[in-house]
Length: 203
Image 1: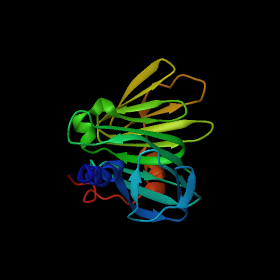
Image 2 (image 1 turned 60 degrees about the vertical axis):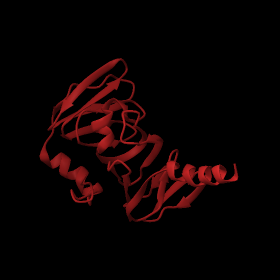
Image 3 (image 1 turned 135 degrees about the vertical axis):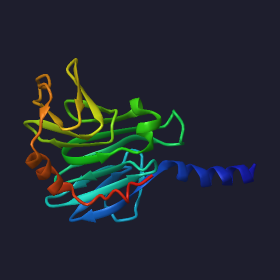
């Protein structure tokens, strides 16, 4: 019995850890178990962690399934639920209250694409693709599909968004139909969340 308890004590923390921080620039803090602390490179991630970034700051998270999320200045990002075991019960649910992000999906998007979700104040984003970015501000939210396909649902309205298209959502209104974005628009987003390389996210 004592041996079983020891094994469980060793396994549970491993299951709770879902990834790690691979890069930090500027001032980044995280909220865990009601305590706010400074984030550090190499720190293990856990479910329910919330990351807060200041002006001109950036944090990059690499998850167990090789999903990678970059979070830019003045952002509020949470890991709502995360579980990965190479099987179809794997899941990832994130929440972005404000700020800017870029997501490169990993194995969960291939194994269980319907269980990879990112929620904001106004929309739920699902994925059928690989790379997408977003800007969440008080007056508007804007999302860019860079590779593959994503879908946006809000106020009983949903759209599929293909590579090269964006969608804008005004709080209190239904999303506007997707439209092509300019390369300059995407470069502006990337300038605030640059740094991921294909090698870091290689399967």
